[in-house]
Length: 189
Image 1 (cartoon, one colour):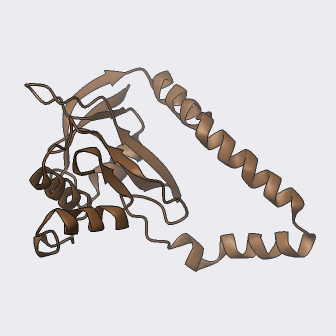
Image 2 (tube, one colour; image 1 turned 135 degrees about the vertical axis):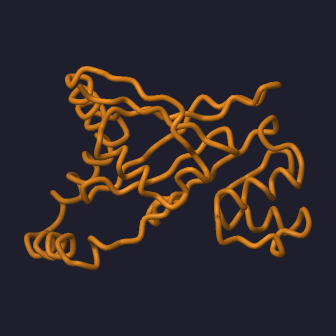
């Protein structure tokens, strides 16, 4: 029997983070957080032991998210979850684009690309829990999630543990730092 663990965010409603599992970077999404009178926090659930270990070995485990439930499940559910993650439409699309680019390369370029992928620098890339370096998409935070400058300040400081409050003294500074991080607060526009 395998164990399914459900994790819940502590302070924010929704969050995406990247974790390294067996040498590969995976997206973990804490979803379904709602701002109501009880503030339902985002949750993520998995039965994959290697992903559980990666999450629980993070520095922000028990600070930004915690385990709220464990249940025993059949081993087949773990296999189904692995297959489901491999068949994730976004991942399939990214792999298809990568193969298209690779097919356009000359043999020399392919050899160099393979050599780069196997080099120690490529495997020791720092993975942050905010966004990978190659994709800088804008995150729009809805008005019902963050409605004041102070709430926006707290949100940014939750996203970046090394961000000092002294850089977020007023609305203008909060908006500037948020823009650098690729975040837009609807309430501050």
